[in-house]
Length: 206
Image (cartoon, rainbow, N blue to C red; front, side, top):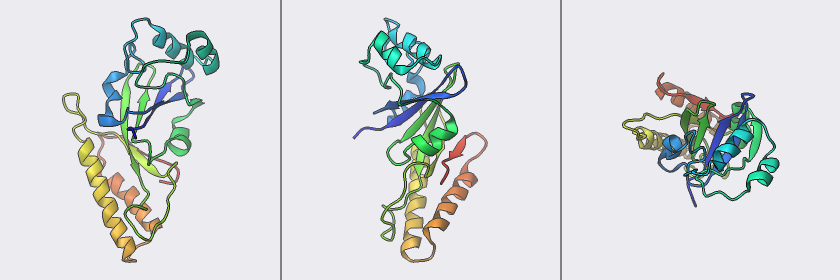
């Protein structure tokens, strides 16, 4: 199944190229794996990945880059992007699947990596009264606390959010609140429990 993630690399024009990683969300492992020498999270002794990254972030068309350097790379992050030249707002509303993508990484032009855990607002697994829920744009992303290079607050955040969703699902089944109110509560509660040390961002219907 994998632990899927999206990685947004800042381009020279301040927009982003969006890449896919099949296992990158596991333990937020890419936080320290993505560096100027290993832009896609793997050994790059030949320098090919670095040259591809430089070309792509300079705005060279991915097909042109693939023709020059090849497509196959043994890397943690797919070298060729899914999308190019998009804003972070577009990532959060149109590209990030809050159910299936477990993490989002934003890599700026200086290769400072910000790791976000995704939080899906759908309650179809917590409530018998809800059959379906959108996944694109329906949730939030939040940074976690790090200690000695490990995401010390990650499990706590995920557990806290899962418990909140279970409680709201039970309230919906008892007809005490509706889905829209539950969504509003998830939004407001995340704001309430997020202090100034964390970055919290929402999708367009989150």
